Image 1 (tube, rainbow, N blue to C red):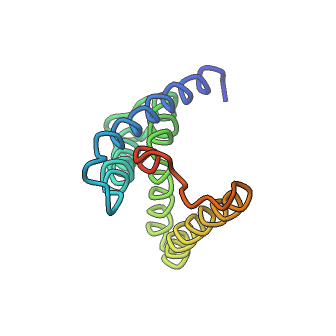
Image 2: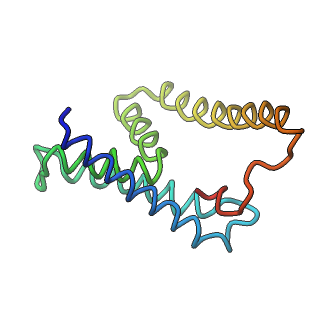
Length: 144
């Protein structure tokens, strides 16, 4: 790991985070009853990008790029845009390795435990904060 690699991941992460914010902001109008902006505009697109770019730019493929470029896009940009892309890539790797049970466990545990973690964090903070009901103050906070 070099300073340049770290810098590229950081810059990619900043760009990805800004992209996530902008997509979330732009999709507020369709996300009142279900977080469509997050599901489709962020998680699905980010998962597609990491799968497409990661596969297209393999060292032994037709369109290889440097490791720093892959780190910039896959860890920085996609990681800042959505960590769901990394989760999706890991799940696909398990499926391709024939580890269907592990892939299913990854999906179920990741989704269930993350929702439970949000609920636990909300519950504890609500208790400490005068039994607050809200989590987000603005619609955009739920999309970002």
